[in-house]
Image (cartoon, rainbow, N blue to C red):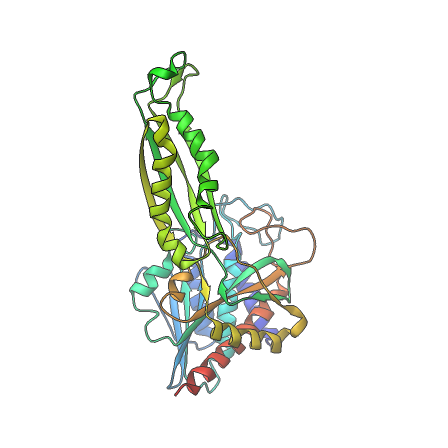
Length: 384
């Protein structure tokens, strides 16, 4: 575990960030708080021109390995009752980013004084919770250039503090957004045979689309097609001339992800054609799946077993949630680790008003992150 003074400092930083949450691309105070602690520990870093997010880099000559932490909060009103609860109504760190950030600062403080066989680059990324996210912005700025490997961790309330989960291959899914507008001439509900029923077509999409995907996508590939909103009509005796539906498509496979837009658009057309309405589809490819690199996973898993013991390292699941760390893993071999953060009581999910990150996990995250980066550097140095 980190020494008591460092752990106390990192815990205090996490609480300060938690009490003052900021949304994506507005993390000005969070960026300054991180910068102050990094400066106090002599960690070289630069704040991005946008003043949200920063990059620390230190070490010696040799390969470069990276660590990504995210800074932003969510538009949720906190209901935890913690003494350091959000002081900003309607905003909350309900996904653990406050802990991710504090852990990354702890990793930097732990490693900066070591004689490293290469360099460590820690990316404090803004805007993970919005699309397009901060990962793409950092990559466009060249922040991933020259990296031999990259890692990140994410809080996991399904595991107790002190436990971790990891797996090779897909660990999160993609997240694409769609809007379908169904159009027709409209008409009277007494004479539906004289018009094209947009609401009937909407009902067919709601009930048939997911099932038909199973005939177009390999059944072994996990996926989820779900509608989040349906709007159409005002009067009970009028068939509306327009109905608007929107939602998301998620899939845990890169090859299938690249095909989903075309499949979705084709299926929508086939489903509504018998009703006679016109369908306009706006399909927006979003965040790719995070595909954990097998060799990077091996390095992180070995580090985790050294820190917490074999019994506390678990093979984890593939989530249908999305994480824009995938932007990095598409250009650099990388892996995402799940960090247990619950007290073992009643399960409270991420993105909920009652989510609590148990602070004993902070030290575990720091130690696993630091040891993983050491091993990634050692492995990178061993390459011919």
